[in-house]
Length: 152
Image 1: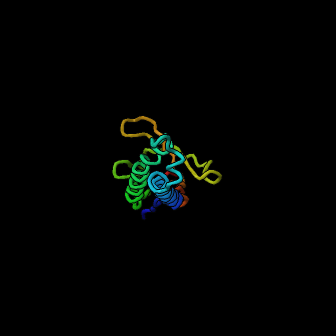
Image 2: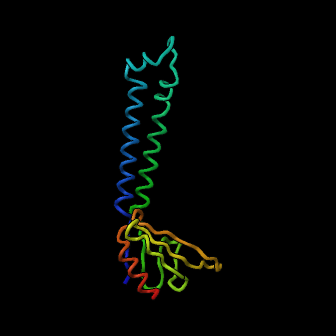
Image 3: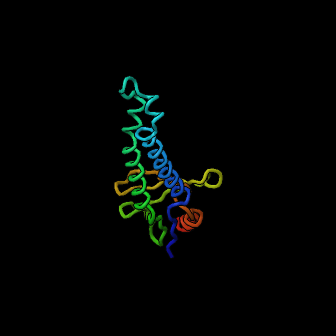
């Protein structure tokens, strides 16, 4: 039985807030830079724009681009999951941790701070640590319980 931990609502909500903020800032800067006559007059010296007006005219495409990139990132991670199956912990298609390679699970910070740390050996025999947080994934308590049961 595989236990899944999808991307947390915390992470998705924060990305949506950043996207909304970028859209609002784009509209605000674009309006002040091109349409707000008072602002344009106040920030022009002898018909030449000062630094503030130039910023308000040049920044909107970059901020809008940031909103697009954040939207694409949100679309890319919307179906991402952490899966604890019978043999391994699957973090992504490329990153898997077999239960046999896990040495310790430090769960002292799970209740107060919402994360636990897995210490394991990678394929080359190096000791690695992986911090897994509830800000990144939801349903971590069930995953942690399953990991502890598999390791014990």
